Figure 1 (cartoon, rainbow, N blue to C red):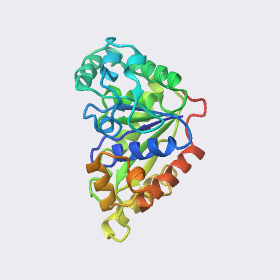
Figure 2 (cartoon, one colour):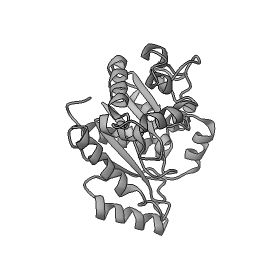
Figure 3 (tube, helix red, strand yellow):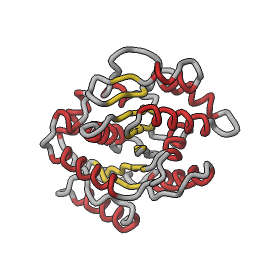
Length: 257
């Protein structure tokens, strides 16, 4: 299973979701986390045990996969980290006629095969080649949408469309991306209204579990730790466990990568 967390909009909880799902998956089997965001936030949560090359150097042909994927500080989670060179490498790939998509997809597949377990991919808030390749290769695409902002729907439609477009172009099986409502305050009228809009417009694709907003989520981000690791009994941690169960049992590209 390859899970890509993607959204054209920032501040919706992509990295928090990525970290939570990777941590929970690792309770039962080894997990590889691929950080495809030049900001390297996922790498800061799951730092490699030793320094070395990462995704940028792999894509640039400057390092071998075995040297780029390394154990993280957390048990049963390895990481293909983002390094400072990733943004420049992505820009170089974007200049190609194929936007570098085949090369990036091949790197993801090779890393997934070598890992032998599940893969979780964090992406940047963009529709640049790295994010597009992640959505094209994944068996499951999760699109977080924060209900605490009136701009929650901005970029959502474009992300969903881009997912289908790139999978069609790359001749990948069609899937229905799953929308995850995040940063939700059930007592707030505006949050309930935005959630209602999501249900009305994307009911079939909306995961029937929201991630509540709370101080614990913010504290986990400040601590650079997965939320279920530091606050396992928090409602948001329990919600992520329900979300993971739903992802495993619904949708996706059954043929894998």
